[in-house]
Picture 1 (cartoon, rainbow, N blue to C red):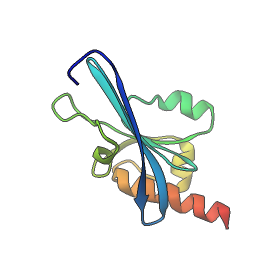
Picture 2: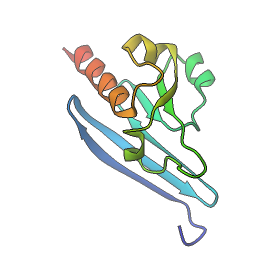
Picture 3: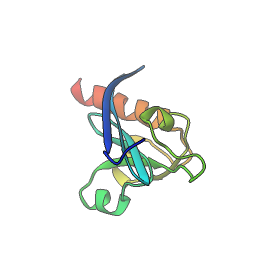
Amino acid sequence: MTDSVPSSTQRQLQFENGSAIGTSQRWVGGQYCSVLTPVGIVGCGIYDLKTAEEFGQAIAIAKGTPTNPLVEPEDLFDAKIVGVTAKAAELGIQVSDTGRSAIETMLSAARSADA
């Protein structure tokens, strides 16, 4: 980012079990990314699991580092999940899954709910 105008991108992503929306937001000194599925979100560590838990949401988070931040939604694919809400765990998502695996699990759950 070369100036002080924040940026936000959104795009459709294809997976084996369906489609999801990937987002990336950047501002001076920060960023976050996520993949939105019909049943929940796989996102970076900026998401607060406590609040998501209170609302019964399926959220799985991965965590980047200052030297290897998660910036684009594709960065989540190989990142390890470090936290999940109870709703995400009910879907079968576990800590140490990859982000891609968590996304596929959410998309599979969404397809099952539609059936």
